[in-house]
Length: 275
Image (tube, rainbow, N blue to C red; front, side):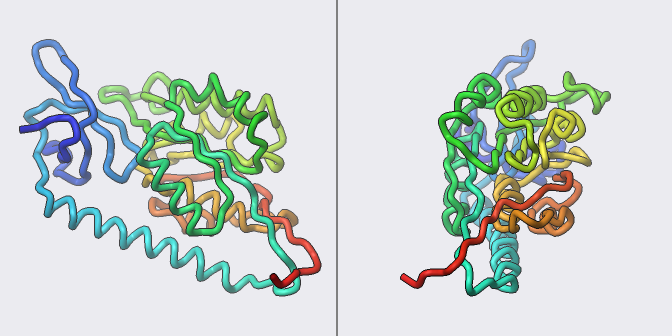
């Protein structure tokens, strides 16, 4: 029996991703389930007959495979950082403000931020509400790096990938970036990542983001924003972030996330005091 909280996959997509049922709705005479990705920032819906209920054992294997992929990325991030020692200096990485439309994803991101030694404040705000509150939040929470994320997807049947009307939440991300740029227009004083799965990359970048999803309209992993901003936070402020290296740190890669030349947000101080 399928209910809210059930873990399912879609037959029409060859059961490639696992989803959680978060709601139900009517589509004419038919019932649809509203879905969110277990580990990808996808919002979708599906007819009940298209869904396959996943067993606890299947979810365990799926989660383990995902955890292994995340571990590989974290290992690479930490490994790369070890080869840039500045023993005489102390370091202050860039501060992060992370707005997320999904509470569970936010908790995952907050956990990884902490493990990576990043100073991050996470706030759960729906994609729709983010444009309304971001200006005030930036004033109340001064930051170097801003993450605006949640769920998104292309609307089934829409063919104009350039139009914001073809996406569930891209217009919210675009509006949020515009509002943030009213507070701080300088792209090196406030570095912005924005977007979710399949988001309108071009529109979000045009609105003023430094990094965004999704150039090839691919699904992005829930933790991709974390790996993007980690590279920015730990790149010295007198250097430009290597875009290709940043994207290599993500789970999705260059098809899912892209960006523009951006200065790092790490500040070094001297002398280093041993505690």
